[in-house]
Image 1 (cartoon, one colour):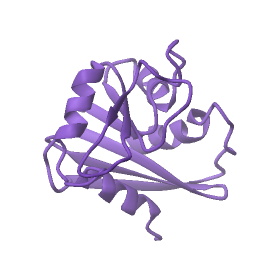
Image 2 (tube, helix red, strand yellow):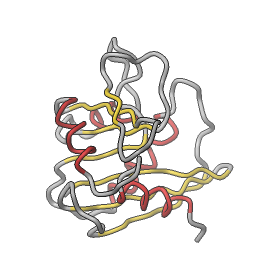
Image 3 (cartoon, one colour):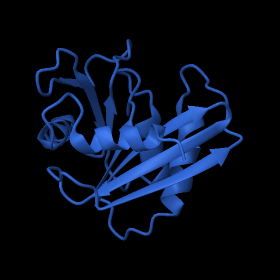
Amino acid sequence: MILAFDTYYNQDKAKTVCVAFENWKDVEPGDIYEEILEGIAAYEPGAFYKRELPCILSLLEKIHIKKIDTIIVDGFVFLDDAGKLGLGGHLHHELSESIPVIGVAKSKFSRIENDQKELFRGESKKPLYITAIGTTLDTAFDHIKSMHGNFRMPTLLQLLDQQTKALD
């Protein structure tokens, strides 16, 4: 099973959504999980993981999946080429480094050059920025590239973004 997570913030509330699917080329998710938490920490520059990681871990506790092959996060695994961990890296550590994590970011983080790959999908002139831990960067890149969809964002990641921002 592959899980993709995203979180949307509204003041001190956070809505975290997880789209679960079996194969990289799937068009539809197998399941969608979501949770709203209150009392979320304020954004801290350079330490985004402190805000989002608790949301992902809380939702993960409610997902009864026996085998997770990979987790995708909206963001970075590394924040620089010296190995400073981003959200994905901290998640990998919290999961005892047992599950590969792929970061898919929509905007460039200025301090990372070598430990990321730019992925141009569809006819977009703007890339997605791919980072990975627990798997090779090339493998992560190929997985995201192979995902269904003709646009910059793969279909299931677009769905995830829409579900995250949908009002309940």
